[in-house]
Length: 170
Image (cartoon, rainbow, N blue to C red):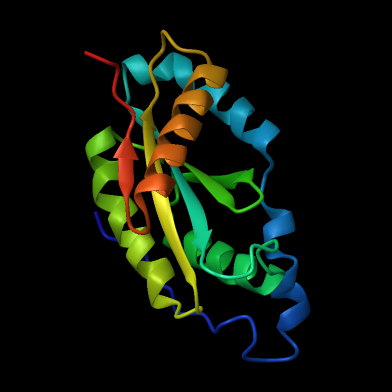
């Protein structure tokens, strides 16, 4: 799977573009919309697989909230990278949820590419980790979300560039 090109200027490159780019994270669908999307997708996953990919930002700095300009650059990068049948929304303050059409193997290819692209933005101290949670018609949207959150927490603990896929305990 190829990731779409990201041929857009950084948020700080032009003063005229700054206001529109600065509002970009606000324009993303919210966590509630993500849960609704998951609920809508779950029944059909018995026929066509769907996977939730969550990207969480990591910062090595003062611990203050992630600046809006940084969130805008990452939002633009992710929005330019998803395919037409994928869905991008906000997962949390510095997390993004992508509902990917396709099996977990698709997400396992896409996630490292997205993490590398975030790193390539060159924002000092910024990196990311990711989590993968497959949708299953036997699950609720809340359970898929819980599994993704659990996996993202584990990935962040391991460190930058880590991708963890949720698996049932053996």
